[in-house]
Image (cartoon, rainbow, N blue to C red):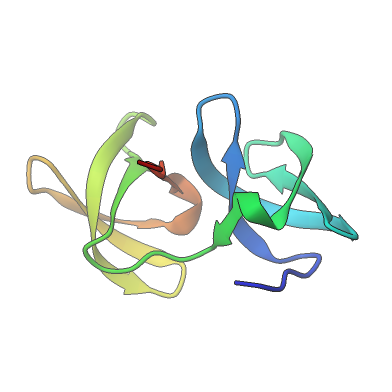
Length: 108
């Protein structure tokens, strides 16, 4: 996405662990974008550190499991708006939402 607006949802890069997490754009001031992660943390960033708030089938991400609130590697097997069906390594699946996903971009 090339153009962001206040109120948009995005996956935003978090320096602490270098993952992209769900966030909301709170304020835009020129090239600076103030975001609030779903976890409550807030910070200034730029469009270079934002990704569209969506995933696609067959995409590999991490999901915070409803079973134990820990992140696991999953593959997206279905998408219905912000609802996402994911498959775990043990081949079990669960429906979840985009706000329970995170991902890492390997820049090699």
